[in-house]
Length: 264
Image 1 (cartoon, rainbow, N blue to C red):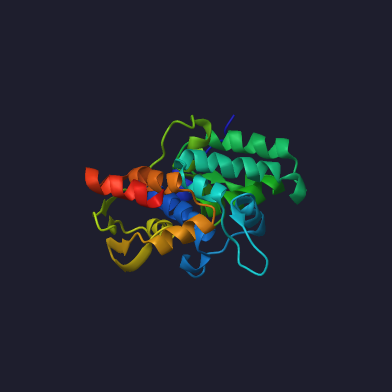
Image 2 (cartoon, one colour; image 1 turned 90 degrees about the vertical axis):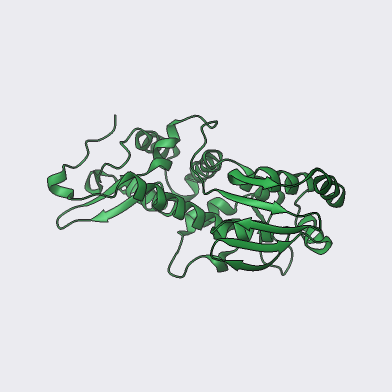
């Protein structure tokens, strides 16, 4: 059973559900940015060693003397819905628990309990065990909970990502929308303010410049060959262009046929 939330007399004003959702999406996007290009992560943002090892397992590959790059499995991970991505990370986090000296059954029990907490309610940190405290700090980095400090007590607030742990993988979580336009000359215009979208497009295209709400680039042979060298397949590029993250893509029939032939 979930623990009792703190009363308003202790916490005062708490973040609204909209504020919590924006916080969760920003944290999750920052986490994915760390996977693709850590240099794009805002300064002051750090991730624990346990979480770094968790998302690097199977998602990054490195050659002798080269920095780790996104693997084919890592690119496939980016194509997943947010819920599926979350469960992938949670499975890796649980499977590596014994390496951190944590009993996996205790961790699973706490994650299940957390999923039945009320979104937006405050729960005291003082009621948690040491293992649960460490887990809460890791989950905060992913945007599953938000931590706040009061005068006498500290508490965590579950976000929608935490409550989604108990939902089906087919349930889609919220994501930032955008629009992608690909011209017949393979010029690419992405109407999005997301740094994550920009870095994902950079994996297989040449991004020329980024305005506050517009990313401009081009799909070239060189950019595609670079993607193929990193283990990204033609099918994955096509899926991402036409389907990824609720981005709506407008390509005329002739352009799509040329594009399909080009990446093949």
